[in-house]
Image 1 (cartoon, rainbow, N blue to C red):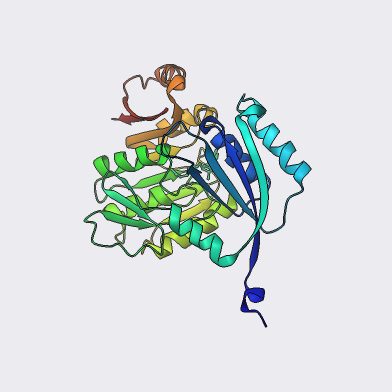
Image 2 (cartoon, rainbow, N blue to C red):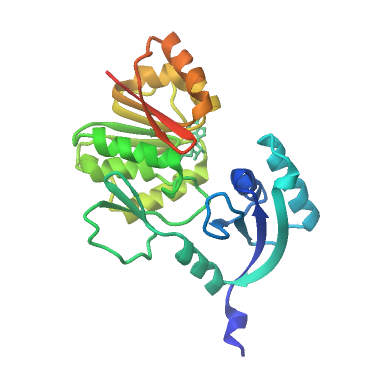
Length: 294
Ligand code: SAH
């Protein structure tokens, strides 16, 4: 028998698109139930075309792909013309894993090095966090996550209690745990409204020898106690209504991330209306994170 016949197969959809459409396409793949996504630049210049590949258990219908891509672009207020080409294919297990390995390089953020579990390049002198590729957000490659990691690296002091609101892969709570919050008696908590994210975050915490992190499905509420350090990498729409709670539960440092540069004024106004006008701003690409310390 041909051993290849025993290998698991996936379906891939490859979209070539303008860089501005990448997030919309990745989102559309998420809605289509992709089990993995890779994005790469074709050519060497930042502004050049991106190739976004979604991997699926079941091949999505062409018509469904088109509808979801169009809807995805519309949500971001983008034109369908930003998509240049869409092709479908079948890939065997080896190819898929090989692609992840090829394109997911370790990323440094402040004191941390985020590596895929198969990367053997140790001795970096940095605090290593191993994250399994999955559909949960938080592989360390996104600017909003990197801004949070940098601030945790600078401001978290061992012994502090920590709450990660919207934990995704668990990456930020693992960072705090590895900064010395990993000792018995320390209080590192993480929540996410997505049950699947919590399942993945628990696995990542185990893989990173951070068994003391307390994960729960849900968000912050009136019952949430105070933490010294609170980190929330969400979006402005989600952050805004949560702000009074987030400010109430923060003892020392509050990091708000997932804010686009053009949304700075808006979030500052809301913060000011809650008596928290004084914040430090960190920038990366089109994103900002705010640090409120008291
Ligand atoms: N903390 C990770 C992931 C951020 S993505 C990182 O920095 O990379 C944002 C996560 O917040 C998602 O997993 C999403 O499911 C979750 N989320 C969205 N709204 C939320 C809310 N109101 N409360 C808690 N989590 C929320």
